[in-house]
Image 1 (cartoon, rainbow, N blue to C red):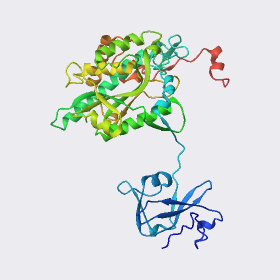
Image 2 (tube, rainbow, N blue to C red):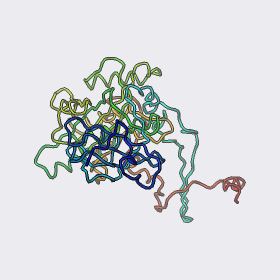
Image 3 (cartoon, rainbow, N blue to C red):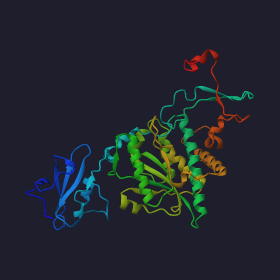
Image 4 (tube, helix red, strand yellow):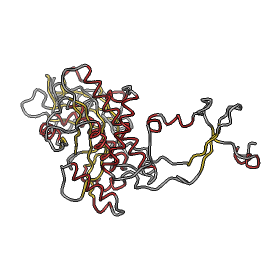
Length: 420
């Protein structure tokens, strides 16, 4: 087949080709595939309507591998060893142009967006949190059980409820990681260890989001971090998001960093003592973790394994695990009045069945972690309030589910919204 380019202007009609789909106007373009290739020129018909399409009309013949930029612009063909392949038999085949509503930013361009994140217990408390009293009664007419309790908002950013959120989340994460370690140890001869990792993105990391807001940027970083961890062979893990680092020089000694964060969070001007730098803390139960140099060479992200006094040991036991988890949750990134999850589970750790003995040990470890670190002081919590909070609404006499006490008769009309 002859080349259909004439004087740099491409006209499918002038070359004896009809317009696909009966279109009367076309915008024809050419892609130069380089000197010496079998396809010097590839002619595309472009429909500029709402559903934009690109159709291959003709070429110089033969078989060709197109450059990477052609895929990025036109799309539509499967990769074969990183390149696209077209042949003369592709003439007339329609390839839809890949459309995306995402916008691309670099991390250094959107750092100010992360200023909206706050640590736990540093936000505003909910309406009436710790002030209102709720009375619950048993609906069973043969039972006269009743109980009064203070109403709490249970927000992680609340100064009252945030402290309890840290301790309860520490107990849950500790129980899940210990269960995962025992589960993996049961079917392998290798010793399964618990590891604490820090994964940090580079400033030139590209972020693609549909909407420009802090939650969208953090979720995009979450997805990229999870993708890197899975490509490194880490499939079961807990990942915690941190939007800030200490303003002073980086401290890789965990105990010294705990003391620095404790002093920073206890003051009202904590923002003056930190700098914006999003990163992730990861807890893994594996025998071996891929080296950080390989991760940096391949992705540009920095993967650091946090160790204690001895360089080979990252986490000693369950108490040490709870201590490090509590420390990471104490300054995790949260958004006020937004459903953003600061920590997330991935892999088999989501659905593992946890024994009650492991849960009880995890609650005890959470108490020890709070006593040792001492960033916050939260109300006492036990095995049931952490893992079975719904039991608090069960009548201890007959087992019925407690309900809020109905209002008095004079307020019944307002209570029913005017329907009574």
